[in-house]
Image (cartoon, rainbow, N blue to C red; front, side):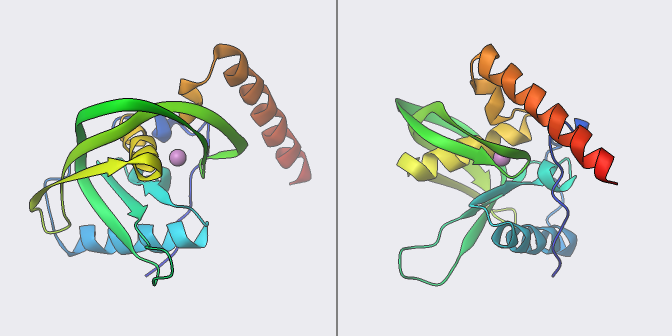
Length: 172
Ligand code: NI
């Protein structure tokens, strides 16, 4: 297992739609293990393959029950097939440093996906878990949570991020 490098905005790979996973082999399972480890290390509660520079339809999400050992699950080729209601929650992203913001999301979603062996599955998620899944599935379509903010807030962040990168560049 190894910890992968998380790419950050504005890396172009974050804007590319991930390829559908067709091969369920040891390489895929290794990537899933590494993504899980990378997510714990960050630490985060969800991670999408494009965030580790793999342009694939694959996410991992934290499914730890309170008081239980840490557990994550992988969803391969996930698609939201039904939704209900709306909710607003605070979001952040490992690829969008130093920003959290409130985002409108569906309250309840049904997701079709495949497990790491390629078996077709379906799950229903609500509340915070539904938020995490919507955020991660967005990544697979090149969408970041800042895209859901007002143009004003998004532009403020773009300026801030430019400044951050400029300052980081000057230190090197
Ligand atoms: Ni994210």
